[in-house]
Image (cartoon, rainbow, N blue to C red; front, side, top):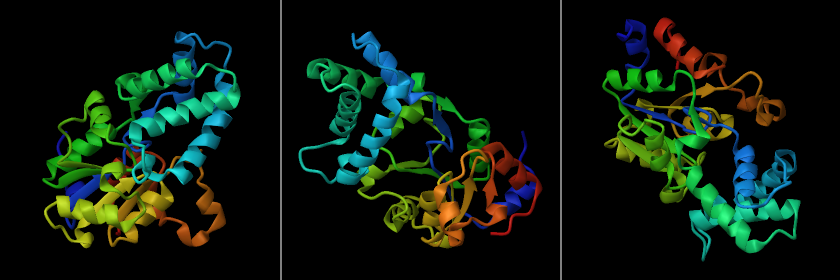
Length: 262
């Protein structure tokens, strides 16, 4: 489909456009259900998704606090052992008597399957959106709070040739919303100025505000049924209405048909 003149005009000021990944371009299908299924295949039965969900949330939050950025700065830990520990702690939270050796096997298998297309789905409009941006001649990249398996996941989902660079927070040593990760993207984009960069993501604090506080422009994919807590607690963190869209497809339509004031 040919580019519209309005789309080209809206992106005219930018030399670099970056995307977040999780819940922006790709979405996990049902991660906790996958936990239960993999455990059952390894002989751990009788544990339900409903039991696992609160334990996963609790231990993901704890691991993210005590070993931030998938353990990138923690001694004797790497991103693989970070995820394995999270899996083991999640199941142990449900049943402390589960055999450790079997849980280790479950953790290793989950580590593999979550890097395949079995656990992910493309968000509607993601591929066409990225391709349209590429067709304008922009440098196109990824900035994601993710571990180094990000390239593997993107390849599995058919995005292997869509980006000029891919930045994961683990290798970068810093996570969004820290301006350091946005600065790294500018450098990878051949020393582009912040005013020439646009970031698109789904997190108000990490993506939208993180980019804007780094001197970039930004757009927000904000599903109507997933109101973010920061909106309720701090009105100053509200995105501009013209920068927030209920879906990626809606955002693309607006860029193609309406003038966007940055």
